[in-house]
Length: 554
Image 1 (cartoon, rainbow, N blue to C red):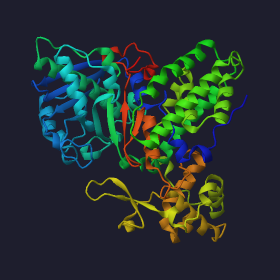
Image 2 (image 1 turned 90 degrees about the vertical axis):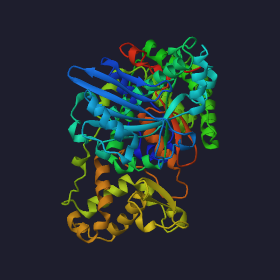
Image 3 (image 1 turned 180 degrees about the vertical axis):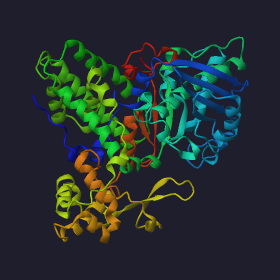
Image 4 (image 1 turned 120 degrees about the vertical axis):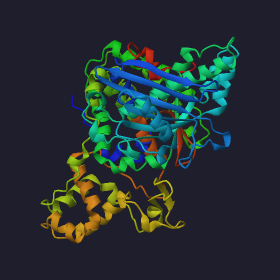
């Protein structure tokens, strides 16, 4: 049976993309699989009784070593902030290429805590900082120092002891440029080194809390139970700085979505689904319900999505329990057709992710194709004609061509770069100043403008000659030709309209990272949890690949 890939014109709407969930394709899960047979060590742990000092953790294999260098700092409560404009954090980290010398650590001790103000070298690969979830961190220290384990119900409301506020890489602040390391087999998948940093930071948080508790009450203190550690992750606060990424990297976005859609297509085409594989799917589904019911947020928007997800999951489980599915040919296609007809996007995409769980043989070969050498696709074919470009736009942007940009609500917002932090921000065109400094992120509007000019241009005119008179449209001419080769390269929505929900853009990217429990704090920033349920470093050589569906309450 032939199954088609899902239509980009439907799938690439922000409301749909903002309903994506983590899957076996997510970068933190593929990172763990890639590094499961590397040697893990804690090479240095030099903290004082209050938990301040230095630590080094590493992964090594053959002649390659990656080392996380940690600096835990004492700061005042009023200095602790998750905002990007903060200048002090509870801890700062860098991932070092190789084994750091004492001189390296001394050099970094002066630079890493400064973050953006500091200066790193080509020896450093990623940079990050994090703050304690102070109330929970102190609660755990108090419990352990008194010889008790913390209450998992209290822990589940947050899910982490620390949250990062940024993870940088690829040449920022002096870090190694990507070209230096991009051909290493172990990091061919996107964001592998960023995931390594976050994972090792998670272990540092456990070691630090145990260390402080032991020093607080040496005779009575106990270590945090490994089962509790396993089901704590690392939090993250993410704002608008992440949103333009998926606009600015069209080929990369395509490759992420294309891998997901290819996996779905191949799974739907399986004629005979084994009982073993179907039981893995059902088992993960049932286990995952605890993750959903422990998903806490004060956001009405997100609570409505969670409620919809739970209601739809109940419907879906009833459908599975009807019993008429057993031994049906093309079972997962039958399931997909039913959920598409009966459930909402939040649950449809949840189940799509779940369908991948039994199928390493389908998912794993796709991982190596999720990176992109975008320079190869950014060349504009100047010998093509206006007529060809117009046809591409009519085929790939039909809904965008219907938007009336003469209406204020379709031009409501503009993207700009903050002068203070050089981070992307969003403003109201009719209330705020600065629209003359607008960033080229209004792709829908610019495609429509380009199309209107193409419509009155000579069909046989080459693109090279067209751009001589209309160079201001070079960025969208390039994008239109990219969509010809990469069908999932473009968001099929208006990124400056009054109905824009920027967190849909954030959630799309974070789902591919492997984030859980999206917790919007506004329509422009949210908190998440990463690695909750993941095996500890000393367990990596043998672990359940479906660990993400474990729960604090299980």
